Length: 219
Image (cartoon, rainbow, N blue to C red; front, side, top):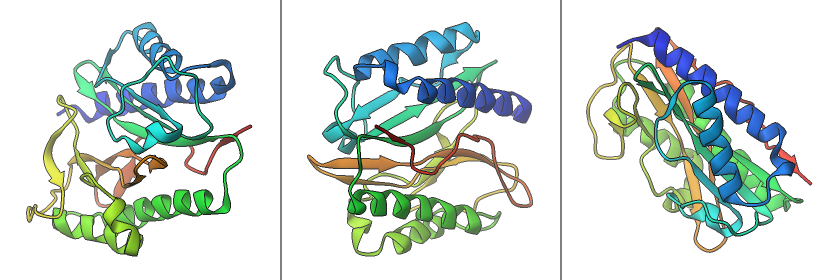
């Protein structure tokens, strides 16, 4: 595995997503954002690591929403994106807010962020996959039932590879692995929030995707 190529892939993903966020007011539909991410990926001489997820308003509650030509809706906007550089992938998700969020929506956003931060604190070699998943669910407490997918996955030449961070995997995480940590909450027909980074586990976790994670509010 080429860690340097993964780092470069993450750096390019950061640059493109940051450019997207900086220009978010110029986009009218999910599809326009989707097309922008594809165009920028090609300009960097890269390929997509996977089809980007661009989901606004109620669509953000769909974990694998397909970008549409419908106008961007007020509410959370989930952007899940990664490129492939020299055969190596990256993966990052950021959730913005279009309009003015309620106190409850802000609370849920920072609950997801806290879950991610607590998991990253506990990430060390020899910890088992299901134990990390349990950290996130413990932070979510009574809302854990709205966390409906795996906590993360390995990243390399494939976007999804071992280890799979889920409640059933008893494998220990090894030093040197690159993986994602991506907790999320999804309330059907209301909204969804996901925050994801690509991380290299050395003696301690090294976060390779750097785009800011405080809630960006676009009014």
